[in-house]
Length: 190
Picture (cartoon, rainbow, N blue to C red):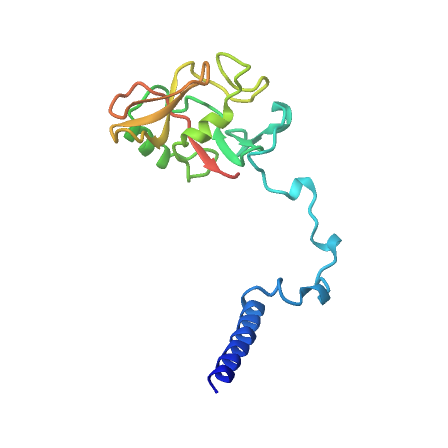
């Protein structure tokens, strides 16, 4: 009697597992007989319709596009939009001052600007170029050969934040209280 009870429980467990797998992983159970609901051509996109990715490498002539009445530059590799004027603040600023400045900025009739992350700034760097370390033929104006703040705090101390030196692309960190770094606002998309 005991053996029969175990066999029944085992069969019930297998049936339950089979149905659970079909419910939670429908592609794993019996999917071989299914027909696709859409034909491949109906969902395909052209390259212009595919959102930018950080893995694409484009020449500067194709990578950058002036937007917002020419006041900003869309980077098609990253999908980020940068202020065309890389010194729009007109000087240097403390880290918190830079964050506040970007937050209240309106460029080309658009708000939503922010201080870039260290990865954002580094994505602009072309190590084969010097002063500025940007791709040849870039459309930016007023790029300073100095340090630009990032919004990324330094992990070793909350008093410091990462920066990128635009003359050579070197990344480092600096005390947030010092007002000796430049501000280059960015926003997502155009």
